[in-house]
Length: 299
Image (cartoon, rainbow, N blue to C red; front, top):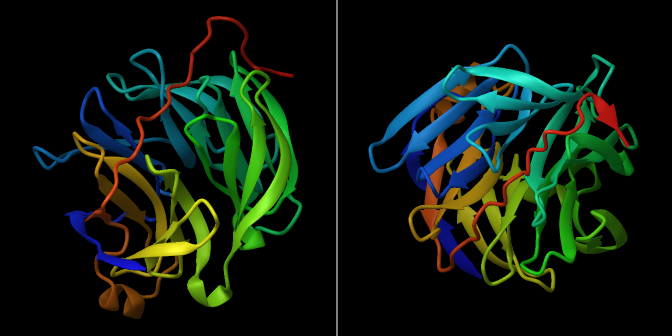
């Protein structure tokens, strides 16, 4: 098993840093602070960071086929205009206050998949949704805590994390319909390893999984074996994304959520952005296709 050590990329105090993505056009890493309601735009070349504050919790951000960005905010999907700092709903999904959207990713055909969780997570209380042509549908019900999502290069397999299940599932995925098929468990994790959170896939087809409360990122092979580990100097490791000009830097988001004063003294970099140089490159981010048709609707 290969061992790597993460180093600091940018010091900040995100409550729940999450959902990093790389914009190859602007050469920026973009991520969110879920419970802080913030969006971060970070340029590694200049070491400059731009922060936008929202009035809602935000689970994920995605690139689109326009200059706008797509958000999974607390109760639905919205576009975000960086120039003005404003967001506009495409569709509201949740009509309850005890739940919110969490992690999300765009599939190879331009659909945005994002899941939910209750603020007090419990099995069977959340769902995974798909947004296409500004309309949403439920892909998966009876989820506990919807988290990491990614696809293989051919797009016919979707890897998915329900954190409460302590596992990664591999689903058959129909690119034409956007529907999920049969599932198998790729790997199960013990409680001592931490809880699987966000993840990404590399050009070799292997997964990189952030382990919440585990202080590490695990590299998982296509056969479900742990083949590498990145040690991170904070416990709450949340998500990962490949970035940089050649997509060979793995960026790692972290959190300081509900940490005590003593824990923060011991882990002063909690909530910061980290990076690690690994032996493989990632894949370009998919972009959501914004439609001019339909809003505030579901299918």
